[in-house]
Image 1 (cartoon, rainbow, N blue to C red):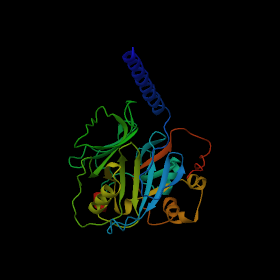
Image 2: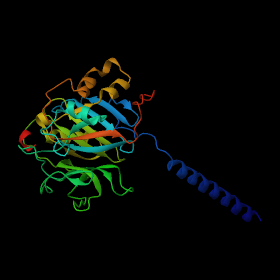
Image 3: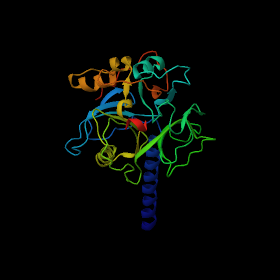
Length: 308
């Protein structure tokens, strides 16, 4: 009889554990909070699903300048390719003019292009090809808006490991460029000694997308090494066009909606496009909310090869 009671108590205990596990599973499958941005970076919230930081890694990376960084949740924001010929324009636009034309929350420069402004490598807009054939040595591909709902909304694909068919592409928006480092931790750019302004797109393991712009010149090798060592949450990263083409801008409405503090002067000026030279860009990538609110929500109260 005693043995049977012990057995019954054990069965009840196992049942409680099972119920607890099922409850935790149910809770985890519900609506998720914003993905946490990488630690050690002074993040401030622009709006729900988007954070910004101006990070100076000089102590750990003495050869790398301050970095303007945006942390974006692709579940809340969509990415769109814009190319001037596809828009029916005679010539490329400055990033300020692109922002006014597209009304995107954020815009940044896409990959490399030739002297005649034709794109080097794969470029897709709503599944249509706007670029040339796949570049044989550039293995980075920023891809967004999948045709299969089971895929992540945006990715940094490494064509050395990830399959991508141009005839039946799994993503509607795509832009090819250089890999910085891959999921194995290997740096994919050599130390050439060349230094320029750089724009980087990175993917975190949890799926968030980082858009990074250097505020001064740096070599791609030193930048790749620093990001890999200091932000271990980044799974892999690629470089867009550098030099004078490196550019990023946020809409005035988005900046106005974000709560302003005295510490924000530099990153606000950078995102507003008030600092640096802004040359015409033939192709840009826009970031816009998946829903279209009448007004931008206030932030949560809680805290081309020839140009490299």
